[in-house]
Amino acid sequence: MNNGIIKFFSNGLPVGAVGVITRPRNPKGWKNSHFRENVILNHRTLRGYQMAIEQTLSIIKPDATRRNLTGKINQRFEDAGLRIVAQKRIQLTPAQAEGFYAVHSERAFFGDLCTFMTSGPVVVQVLEGESAITKNREIMGATNPAQADEGTIRKDFAEDIEANSVHGSDSPETAAEEISYFFSKLEIVG
Ligand code: ADP
Ligand code: MG
Image 1 (spheres, rainbow, N blue to C red):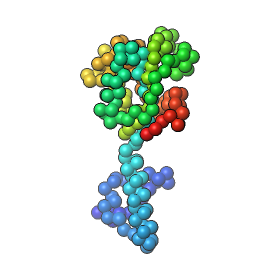
Image 2 (tube, helix red, strand yellow):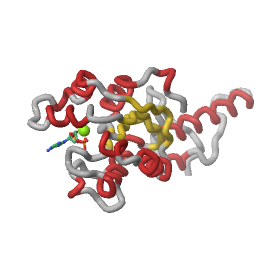
Image 3 (cartoon, protein in one colour):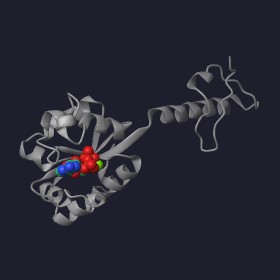
Image 4 (cartoon, rainbow, N blue to C red):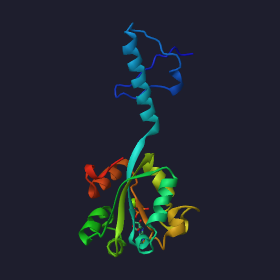
């Protein structure tokens, strides 16, 4: 049984499991009020660490807006516990689509992809929640709807590998870049 000594890495993250904070003690002889405050702070740090709340960029693509599927797709996100903390419907210019998909500029499908992404309005949005980046990729399904799992957005709504209804960031780094491509901090309200 651990007596409640909680060790923290220098970056503030806890060492060891949550179960160690069962019986806090006051090794430094601090005044009770100071000690209580410190324990509460440590609990908060632990909770934040476990939850890993993330934000990710989502785009509802032109094939989906054309078929009036925005609401049905948003329902999937909300049912899975993701919150839509920013959202706007826009018409991408060719330059905006090319800039967004610059990472794919050498791929054979790049020209067609940019033409598709500018063929109608898109809904760009920021989704927030626990492990939002990977959770959204799971809700979306595989790039090619023929390979997407049952119950995913792409399985149920995508037309083909290009017109696949949704985009979702694939890592924390791309999520940060892609969110700032479309949104200022003031437009994201959690
Ligand atoms: P994802 O959107 O699943 O992250 P990628 O980043 O690999 O997939 O590709 C970006 C987008 O480019 C896809 O969502 C799809 O619209 C399009 N795309 C990918 N592969 C192809 C392909 N082989 N042919 C046509 N379009 C493609
Ligand atoms: Mg991708």
